[in-house]
Image (tube, rainbow, N blue to C red; front, side, top):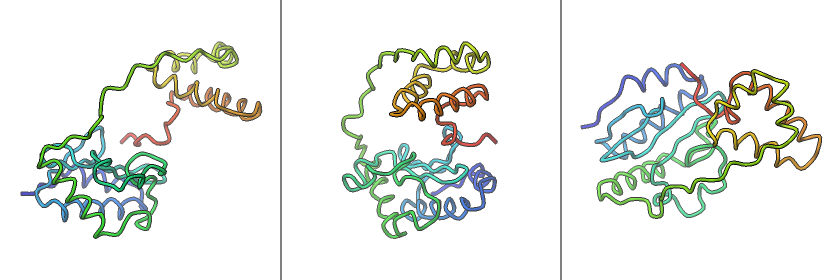
Length: 203
């Protein structure tokens, strides 16, 4: 028997106006494809379980995301490879950005079948620990002059630090690098991670 979680109703109600019809549609599709689905909240985002995690959705300031836990076994090869943003279908700004309802329901049915059979995603191993990147001299010098930014950066995990370092060092032009450095200091001073725009808004 399917169960509906009131926390998801509240999540949808608090989402931006553009996001509400998208989230309602995705919720309806999941229930149509898997009548025995169980709704829950994980990582502050709505998720749908059936004999294990099946899929999840989220709303951000300007887009939504929807992803299958075993997307590699559900979607056609390369179907979601070129998408940007989290999830299996990239940044969803309207219902037009999603496959049609029949196709989506088919994906949900396949996801449920995989979980029913206990099939795991092949090759999902623990990622290797990466060595910390060396700090760029200009970034180090800038942090020394900005106590708030330095405090935030030092409190971050190695992966969050890496995101800032890579973003700055990957700039091809000096002008771009200076712009990224300035933005990094501003965001760090505000206590923000590099990809703060893609993180769920705090309720």
